[in-house]
Length: 431
Image 1: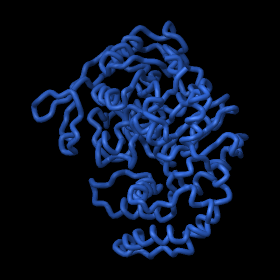
Image 2 (image 1 turned 45 degrees about the vertical axis):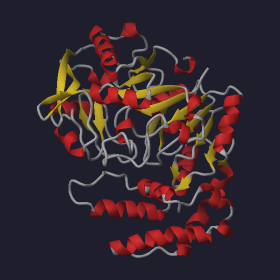
Image 3 (image 1 turned 60 degrees about the vertical axis):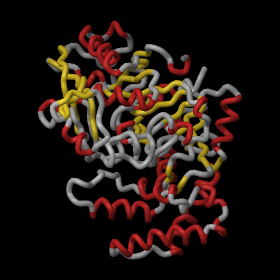
Image 4 (image 1 turned 90 degrees about the vertical axis):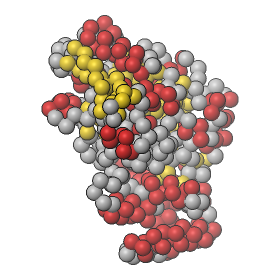
């Protein structure tokens, strides 16, 4: 058996939580490789809902080791709060089932504040739609080589100069924004409050995973957000602050790229987006309202209403290429039940010319017009289907056409939020 990387093939919110939980039963280790607590995964297990933001989805399953890799930025206070919340639901998180990379970057209160200040100051039309959780500013400090990291909390006596370095940068920004500077003492106290709670989880994650690989353990790599929010390959600048593509699974955990294995792209049967930015197939009409209501399209983390539209095969085909996707997990097929007709975007028109990809230019992205194919819908319910024979013929036709258009086969098909309402075509861990 090999390892599996799970990535979102759209703008996030594709239903990764359920699929990762379903796969985690077959894995020994679930490793998160990028993002922060701006992610949102909802798991439904035996009728109980668990909402996760930072912790890997496998943490709710006994006998599994959850790992947070060095590619993740960690708000230690949010981490503690999430651990305590799971504890109140009967899920105990200890160093026995959670390890955190010693070289992972920390999110501080000054990062959250700067995130909000910038978003508030942005002119209309230039707002990114950030979750204001400090993710972007923390990544900036990481690449600026001034970040505070997990391992720094193990020796508070040597932390002072590092705090001075980060404050030199941030207080200059704050003076420019006309807000009060942050004191050295306040940051030190902020870190002291959580040091004892989080340091027991610290581990050289690259070493742990290398040992696990050599022992034949099965590793599931879990990403956050989606491909179209990737800092390089997404709809820039309306993107997240990290690489969300499958290649980041290696860099964000310290595993060699040759050890990553099968790439599973989580793909919603229609398209949604939260926040600002281009969305060629958006349906700001009764169709969009239908999809939003049927799909309960509200963000797990922010509660923001998601924008909804038809399936965009152009974007997903592009995601298949940039991730090296081996197969997809198609989710929320049941949301399309009852529609008379279903449209799929198969190309774009840009300034009078037909193209088969989304350009990198922000201006071009706003000008592209979708070219649609129309398929007959189905009236019978697909909710809870667990084998192909349970699906209406038109639903099967829709799935097969999606496969053809995106150039990747369906490995899993999800027909409800319940983990067992899944049609298994082939097991990614077996390929």
